[in-house]
Image (cartoon, rainbow, N blue to C red):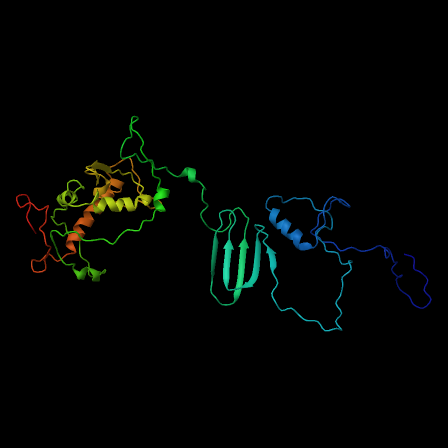
Length: 363
């Protein structure tokens, strides 16, 4: 190769200055080549908006169009610098910071507060709070991803749940006349000022409670015993005490405890039931049907996954079998938890009106 003549030294020639007057613009190697200029796209104020936008739609639109140099911040813009020679006050208070998530495009806000954490999920999300009275941070998280926080989405796959269709306890005829209709929503808001109860009379005898049942634990168990006892659960019109009161008192409404308790809990009832109301001589008698729902206890009636009527109604886990079992356990336990001794028996003013010495005997 030809060598340039040098007067003072010998060596390679000097590098020529090529492109020295061309302005330089910073670029990112991750930018994709596109159009030279796209005036239809609004430029963001800073890179945070672009990063948040990419994070929100990266999973759905991966190959989205980007203008060359779109994500780079300009270093040639004028930036006002503060006068350091003068005194300035520094604000040490925390500033609300917004941080976007690249996975679900959510928003995380962190604010100085009372030590309370609040989280609210998006689709299928959850909302919760925790903290105390001391100073702390308040974190508000809002996710808009498909999953969100763990929690039950109401209405999600409700169509897939088995619908429990229960038949009415009484078949309403076409020729029946509707006198009145009372909705459960009205009963739940009902509030009456009742007078203090008064004991009209007492019948029978009672035994004291065996307090040893309060100390039952794993190592001192007591098996349930099947005791042969008669349990009285008559309807209102067949109760001899109510019959006597209806003839000799000024009361005009008569009802037993089992029927009254069901009416008070009717807004929470799920299984069908019915009551026979008799109006006689200006007085109302509330009666139950023999062998109806009033004579048996229910099991998990208000549970989310209540027992279902399977094809085999004789199974041990059917609602009918569970109801009979619960009633049987309750009756035997109520008797077993008493100390049935003649010395501790407490007799009431009147004898038991249901006792018949020809058909039964006292324990």
